Structure formats: structure tokens, C-alpha cells
Image 1 (cartoon, one colour):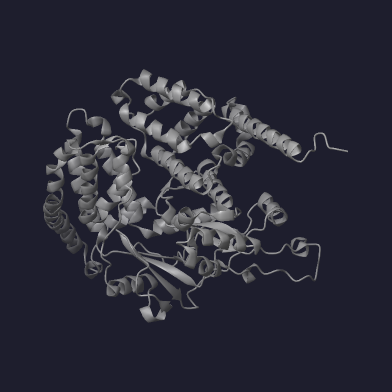
Image 2 (cartoon, one colour):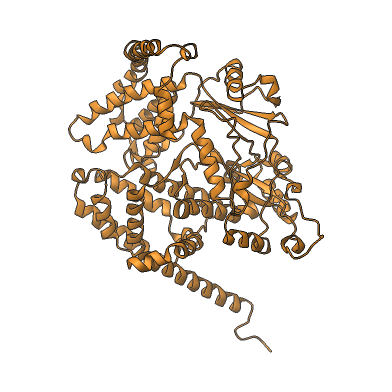
Amino acid sequence: MLELSRQELDDYVPEVLRGSRKWRKTIWRALDTYLIEPLATGFRFLHLVIIFVPVICTVPVMWIGARRPDRDNERTGTLWWYGFLVASMERAGAAFIKLGQWAASRTDIFPTEMCSIMSALHSDAPAHSLKVTKQTIEKAFGRKFEDIFEEFHEKPLGVGAIAQVYKAKLKPDLAGSEDDASTEPQTLRERAFKRVDPLLKSTPHRVPSSYVAIKVLHPKIERMVRRDLRIMGAFASIINAIPTMEWLSFPDEVTQFGEMMRLQLDLRIESANLMIFRRNFRNRSTAWFPYPHGQYTTRQVLVEEYATGIPLEHFLQNGGGVFQKEIADEGLDAFLHMLLIDNFIHADLHPGNIMVRFYKPEPFDVGMNLTTLKGRPKANPNTSKDVTEDVLERLRPHRQEKDAWTRTLAQIDKEGYRPQLIFIDTGLVTQLNEENRKNFLDLFKSIAEFDGYKAGHLMTERCRQPDAVIDKEVFALKMQHLVLGVKSQTFALGNIKIGDILNEVLSMVRGHHVRLEGDFVNVVLSILLLEGIGRSLDPDLDLFSGALPILRQLGAQSGAGMLRSGDLSMAKVWVGLEARKFLQASVESVEMCVKYDQLSPNI
């Protein structure tokens, strides 16, 4: 789809010329390519010079001030300069805001504190006019604005660097139902599980929302971003020519960043990603993705079901109460399925893109699930009520009162409400190609076998620039030391923070100039971010225990292939985790027997 999107941009001509002869289009493209765009890019360059020259001139400030042990030992002057850089990037516009947000995820290249400050980057972009929004939406639907919506909230729900979002209600003749194909079981195994699942866990049914979220790109944003990318590419080439800087390969990073931006500038790609996630999770109850109205979605407009949920940030601030373990486990399960089973990973999993909805489980009706019983009325899943709005009304007054928030959640639990996660903003996804997936699994295997030395050598041999790595042997020995430290605590994962381990690895990668693939780093950063969110909710979150059911499924799917190839390393991981789980369960069982005097009961 990205290739098709590029081709559309290459073939673009203004509407007034679309019915014109070929020679007129050729003249317009020549003028646009060799006159208009170079001039516009030149003026944009002068604008950026005005913004960033003060940043360059203040670089010496980085060597001023006392070091802060609590801020990665950075000087106060350095921290001030990072903040000044971030403020300048906010003023520079959409591409530079997105560049800062992307750079914040690359702790394998940039200092930790710089990434931390850049992660707070937000857009102060002004909203484009309602007139432009209406024109863009009319073009997408092919009818007058008044004939599209029953309700339209004119104030945007949010304004981002590249788009803004509105809430609306479609006319009845335009409001389609959810895609039955994504929820209907496709295979014999899936149909069997649909019969069994209600016995094990009540899965939530949903009434498709009559409201939609409309995302509309800012006008001319594509051209502005394209000019900024050209300027970034030119500067990246200059920096790459400086001795000792070539290991950063900034031109490659700008190319990768450009690909990321193009993915976000065609909203049809986000719609397609939503459909893939919905298909992948059609038989899983841990997460839900909004339904996209693909028939109305264009390059500039995305129409999707309005997701009613409570932002995860509220639970991180006030705690999850009785639901905290359930929410953390469901988030972990959803992510591990994306990573290990689907190889289709949401690449922007910060708390702002995760919400929690509540539902009341459908009472299990045996007659509904036994096809042999005739004449019995079938339960209609569309009669289930999404009670998130009701729960939100009860929780909203207590957002600043942690104790009252926790008590309300406990009452909601007693009334039988259950949580489910909602993931939004799926414009960015990560898919490891065959080579990167092989590298990831090889690294995973070597770490799971506690062979840190081998893991270190794999990372240096398969990085982008093996010749630029400093002290390969020292790096491998450091990895071995780190992995052995993990091995000594492997049966007490509560003492291990995966995020701390990954941060240490990324620090070593930066120090030894090991250039990792961007997709690989995205996966590592997603794990780091997820564990941070999970442990905020549940300090005892066990990443390995959460991976066990997924590894069982992975083993069932690829067991024959492992036996044929003779590669049993993943099987070792599986067996090791099963043994660890069994031993933990055994210890817990003995403790329960002692606690309740069942080993030697008094007679």
C-alpha cells in the first residue's frame, strides 16, 4: 500500500489539470519540480535557520554546571540545552515534532536524558479551519456535508502535528455494521473454541457505536513534510562526512524516519492496520480495536468507530485498584501475541493510545451453545450494553482523589463489571522482515540459554555496520556478565526489571557503536515501555509467566518444524519456563497447606 501511495503522489496534478492534455501536465510537473519546489524549500530552509541557529550557538552551555547524579550524571547546562532544543523543534513544525518523538525512542543512539526530555514533545500546531475540514470530508464521502452527519462536534477532540480529530454521528444510511468476517470463526478449531470459550471466560459483546471519530489531515501537510525531509537529508549527509560520526549513519536514519512519516500521511494505511489487528484479535478477549469505515476513508480522511474508554493514564495516576492485575495481564498478553504470534506490533504503545472500557459479561446460556436444542430463542449479542459511559460518570469525580477512586473501582467489581483494553492510533506498526525476525529469535534463544557471550557476538556481527563497532570482545563479555546476573535471579522475577536490563543493553550498544536495525530497536523499546506501564499497575508483573501460554501456542504451531530442523532451543525455553512455573506453583501449594494446617491437621 505504501508503494501505491507513493505512485499517487508522483502522478498528482491539480484538479484543474486532470482533464487536460498530457503536454500541459508535463509542463506543470516540470515547473513544480524545478522551480516551485526548490524555491519553497529554500524559503523553508531560511525559516529553519532562524529557529535553529540559536540552538547551535548555545551548544557550549552543555559544558557548564554541576553534574546531576539523579539525571544520568548530566550537567545542568546540558539539561537546559536539551529543553531548548525541544522547544525549538516544537516551533519548527510537524516533521520536526515527529523527528523529536522518533529520536526519543532511539536510546541506542542518543543519550538517555535527551530521549527522556524529547519524549515530552507535543504539538502546539493551530487547528486548521472548519471550512477546510468540511471540504475535505465532502470530497471523501462524495455528498454534501449536511447529508453526511446527524451530529458533528465542531470543536476538535485533539489537534496533532499532522491531523486533527472530530467526533460525529453518521446518518443512518451511512452507518454500517461491524465487519462480520472479522468476528466470525473461520476454521474448525476457532468454531470449536467459540463453543467452549463461554464456559471458561465470558467474552464481551459490543454494540457498534453510532458515533465515529473523523481524523482529517492538515492541508498541504504532505508537501511541507517532503521539503523538511529534503533539508534533513542534506544536513544528515554533512554530519555523516565528519570523521567518527559515520557510525551513526544519519542518512539511513533520515530515510527510515521519512518512511515512518509517509505511513502517517496516508490514512488508508492506518485503516488497513486496524482491519489487520481486528482480524488477529477476533477470537481474543484481551484487546479491542475500533472498526474502520474503509468505504469512506481516503488519503486525507479516516473514519472509524468512536472508542469510548477511560484513558489508561488515569489508572497509572490513581492505581487500578482491584482491576490492576487484570489490566496489566491483559496488556501483556495482547502485546506478546502481537510480537510472538502475529509479527504485527503496534509501534506507538504509550499510555495515551491505550484506553480501558468496561462491560457486563453475558450470562452463559447452555441452550444458546448447543445446536441440538431446537425452538430455543438465541441470545442476541447486540443487546449487550457497553457500560463504559456509566462507569466513567462514576469515576470522573474522583480523578484527583485516589482513595475514593479505589473504593469506586471495588464497588464496580462487586457489581460484576469487567475491564477490556482498547488500542487506538495504529498508524505505526512494526513487522520484522525474515532476516530481522531470524536475528531477533537467535538473540532471544541465546539469552534464554543464558549464553550472553554468544548474544553479544550475534549483535555485533549482525548490526548495520560491524566494522564500526568498538571492542567487540569487551561488548560480548559485558553481555555475558549482564545475562549471568539475570540467571542468578531467574526464579525471583519480581526482583528483575526487564526495563533496567534493556536500558543497560542500549547504553552498552551506544558506547560500543553497535548500530541496530530500527525495527529491532522498536520491538525492544515496546517491551521496555510495556513493562514500565505494567509494573506501574502491578509491581509483581511476571513477563515470563505471561509469555508461557503464548509459547505453548507457538510450540503447537511450529513443533513439527522444530523437530525436522533439529533446532530445539525454543523447546528448551518452553520446558524451562514450564519447570519454573511448576516449581513456583509447588512452593505456593506447600505454603497454602501449611497456612491452613493441611499437612498435619489436628484431629
